[in-house]
Length: 258
Image 1 (cartoon, rainbow, N blue to C red):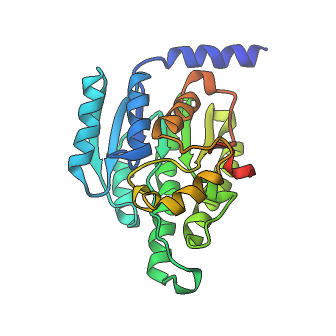
Image 2: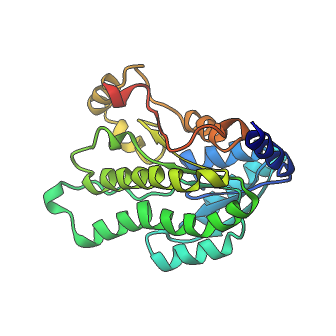
């Protein structure tokens, strides 16, 4: 019991303003997560690949709610830019790895470059940012790492082989790191969204026939929203989430078990 009490005291000492980097937070799920963490008291670093205007919108939403935010820009499809971002972000207490690249292509037509870009953005960049964030987390004996995966880890789309494989690889990394970092007060988890209505899939879901098939594959019978994912990430990044680590939590309306 003394070890548990010591950990509680350590956490209480770390209740100062915490910083969080949310990659891919200029829109969609990432934006909802950034706004939610700001409401939880985090100073949020909003990240974008290229659309600075969208990132500014996220920043304004956070500040309008009384929160604090800054912006960093980097194309995580390129390892050198991921390394640059890892240096520019500084010390962070929570790292939410949401940025990803999704290219629809029949498996027999996938090019090496398409494979490289997706694996770099969806897996390699996550690893590089974790490597940069962990030393500070270890020093303070507190940290939160959350990767954003996909229901495709369990139900791979036939035209997104590399995307689904990269998300499965990311979750494998989460499970490995959770075991290695648990003693340092760092939790590492994956949140796997199902069909979330964002600008990424609005075009595909505008086809009534396709939309009907997709809805029929979701046990609860409707699409999720970015806020459905943000709530889970907020829990995992909080003190209340301290006993959850090494998990892949599906926020998918039951689709992964359908």
